[in-house]
Length: 216
Image (cartoon, rainbow, N blue to C red; front, side, top):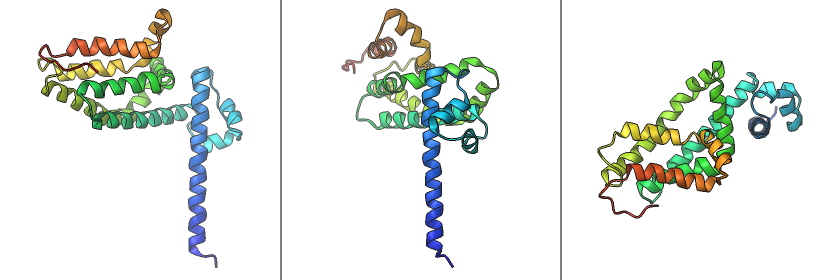
């Protein structure tokens, strides 16, 4: 009779190998989606680049391309949630914490962020499915950003006469990087210059008139 420990070890190894393969598929799918866009991407091409049979892709993602896209959104959202949590706990001003979030979106994840957000403009079942599945995951992220804004209002950085809900909605719209792609191309701005200008417009607009704090 085979020792139970050996059987459990093999099961853990099998699960780990599946996790590694799933991560590989997602990484390759991300590259293909960025290069070719949603409509031109095929499961055949993703399988070929992964070096696996197409059937293997469907074992990991039975829903095909739409399920892959959803998984990429989920992974992206998890990474964004970590970035927001790190910004929230940073030893900085409220403005500095929000600036870190902007820099994460515009500088670190700009390519994928833009590509994924463009999918939401297609409408239809995919957009609705993504909203239903990912909407609840956005709530704690939104709450964390709101807490930073409230802190800024309490400590005199931001105007406390402004609606916090309105500030939150405005800031969240700033994170839609894909809307600024035409500006980057037309004005030949670098992402660094774009984030600096967007930050200046937003923070100068909500800055408290009595705040003498150095801008970050």
